[in-house]
Image (cartoon, rainbow, N blue to C red; front, side):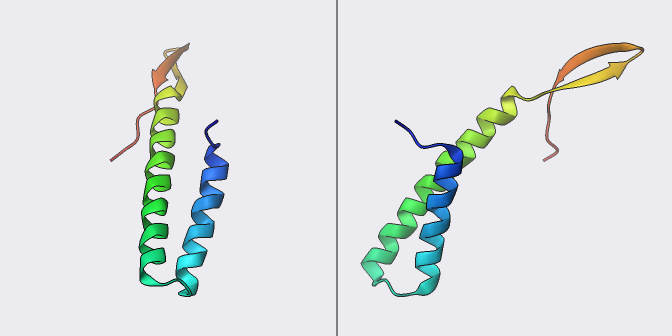
Length: 73
């Protein structure tokens, strides 16, 4: 079973905390960093998928219409 977005974010925060402490040797630090990057990519994918599902209801000429949510890049 895959972890929820929130669980992934918690795991990512733990990894960042471990790396910030500086107690890990180089190999362990690299491994944790790689894990963090993987989780970060999974979270980003989850956010992108959610963004695609979001729609906005807009009032145009007295009618309510549904439009895709678009971010400004």
